[in-house]
Length: 271
Image (cartoon, rainbow, N blue to C red; front, side, top):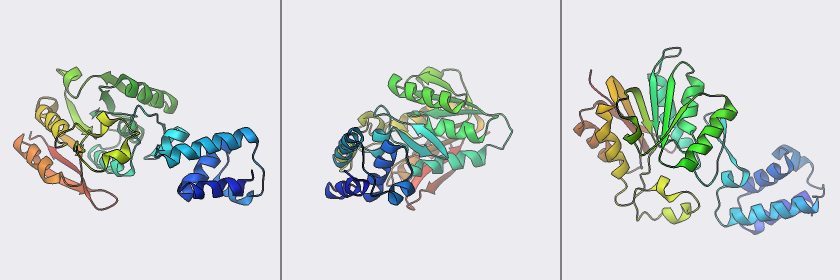
């Protein structure tokens, strides 16, 4: 099999052209540009077989990031496994907002609730080395992935096992971020996400349970003047705003994602 034939095989299976190129580039440890310049080169049989298996998995809906084992987020190359959600570009909106609230070189206590791959915590620590970052997750498998990413990137983050505020009694933070499960349990999009951990996607019910728990516990864990920033569904902004206002937060604001959907809402605990 030649490279051009391998790329054509992806098209026949209905796999996106870019995904096909990235899968083959990963197997060959080459760039996409190299593939296109060497499309008449023959593939070694073992590589062709591995690539065929990769294509079949992608055609079955397995995320590209799980197959290649990596995803870029906020300029960092993160290792990902099926134990964690694949980091999404829209979540970078949450990180960018956090960085606006964290002056460079100024110490602060930052918390990432439900860290998954560690994407949010590591992006904040990378951009603001002076801050102390704590990250939690109820999944030990997810924490193992996050800790491995931190070690590989040489970024110091304190990873703690537990659900939401449970392992953090007595600790207070200047800034808390979270991308919790927020998809409703009967949402029509969930079947397409079946390869990702369901518990990281949905709390079941109306999708707001995790957000309710986080907002309810936040005032006891934030310093006066501290901020809580939350990612949520495109149709949940008003509900999250109401939760924050009901818990006494001020300056409640919603920001939009790359597709102009309302995606992140935050507020400040009064001094």
